[in-house]
Image 1 (cartoon, helix red, strand yellow):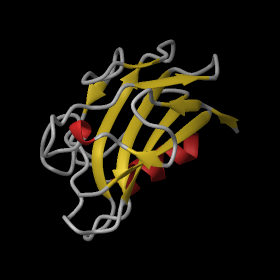
Image 2 (image 1 turned 90 degrees about the vertical axis):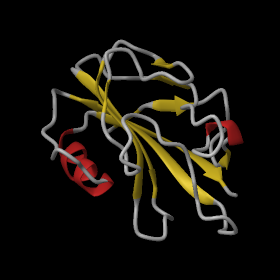
Image 3 (image 1 turned 180 degrees about the vertical axis):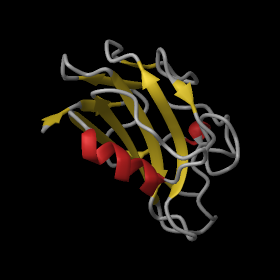
Length: 150
């Protein structure tokens, strides 16, 4: 499977996400950049999840329908053509990191999938729902991990 190169000018892989991107900070999504998307991709799907959340994997961001010709997402905005979904906070779009104070650093997995077409998701999908659907059909994917601690 092709690997999409996914990175952010705000942080490097497995380093700390700046506080202003946190839910208690400015709560703005970090800029993302990507490359190596297969030409046959019909759309991209982006999610950010925290598998270290106390109650199970927490969905911080889900965007579907992203233009496969795009090369990133500007800070504080969804990627071109993208449709933002409700996050696990019950908010539309980005919901920044908010691990419990005093917890060890949580990991935030940004995952970008190149898809051959739209996928069918439940009305309020969990991260597991998204993986179950996207992993079956993905042409390529990329992952970027950020850390956050309060």
